[in-house]
Length: 254
Ligand SMILES: Nc1ncnc2c1ncn2[C@@H]1O[C@H](COP(=O)(O)OP(=O)(O)OP(=O)(O)O)[C@@H](O)[C@H]1O
Image (tube, rainbow, N blue to C red; front, side, top):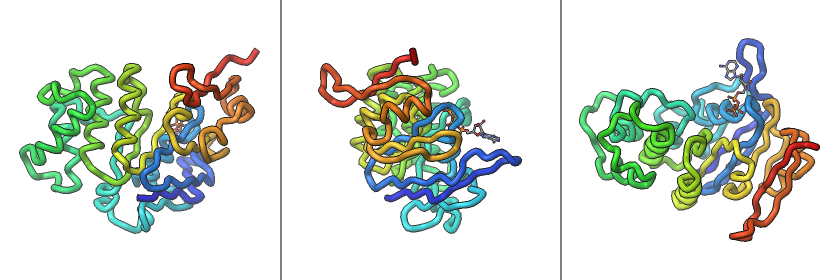
């Protein structure tokens, strides 16, 4: 399913968080939102999931503007793994993942439904062993995997992830991107690590102070000049010595 953000501006209490931002995520692709801290990545993701209403502009998920269809319709189309998902802390990992099925069931239905889907999502992130453990008692990376499993369990055509690898160990980060690829859904994620964006994203949207500076393939967008302008570091895209695939390396300005 296609996602299109058209000229979105978000203003809160007179402060412009995002200004006239737009991008397109084509069906089945992985799109990375990159930019310095506070550049508007999370805010844009929240606009796509209908958690934030743009002050102007519009967001399309599929053929419809998310504000012209009901919240339930958007929940069935868009799964979200947010950065801070404290609402799961008092639940077991299985119950947390089960929340991903709510758009199909209704919030008041009790008991663990869809146990096959819940188990398969936990298994996909290597957390089946923790199905009965309290999420609040898990490590940061384990919790992040459970929150990802909850989004996967939603089986939505669009997946939004806010820094999904920030607490994961090196192998889990690589497995995460394999998982996203194999999911075959439209994925839009905020990525803090420019190298991960280059290595794993089909398209990159570069944000700076709430504005989209450039979008396109990682190599087109993350030129040394732009990375220097936006992040204030030197950079180069080089072939990985082991795989030959492009990677972005950085160094402090001299
Ligand atoms: N509810 C709010 N009220 C006022 N300002 C906000 C609000 N939410 C976010 N901001 C501000 O909007 C800007 C964009 O925030 P956002 O969280 O979208 O950035 P980000 O690119 O995701 O940052 P990070 O990389 O640090 O996660 C920041 O300057 C932030 O302080």
